[in-house]
Image (cartoon, rainbow, N blue to C red; front, side, top):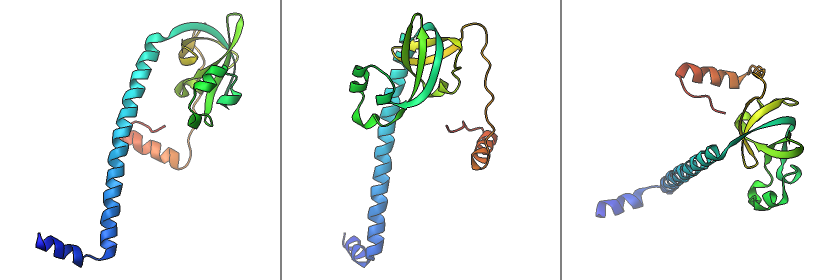
Length: 168
């Protein structure tokens, strides 16, 4: 015990500050890891519920845009239920004609880029959320992916060689 006390007093203030900062950073990483695990678990549960409740509907996609939630044309009760900190984010909004009526839906980020405009599709819908889609009349033309340039292409090529999943 006495040797620890001697060591503590012989350490320079810069070393003590560095140790304290290191401990705080490690604690921060542990907390973020735990919170990330909880958020991932919650998201997986919500995805399972959405997949279980989806229904396929034939619709004509009129327009798709990324809009803020207040400008999206969604019902007011949906806007009111959205947390305040999420209201500034842009949503992938799809305006479509389902049967005789026009509806505003929210698309999944993964499928938003692939949704065809001015085409009829069969979409898997869970509430106001488009989960997936397929062509109503045969196959849809798949748009060609733009070739990446610069550092993004290098990173993707290295990940492909390493066998890792590409980061989106």
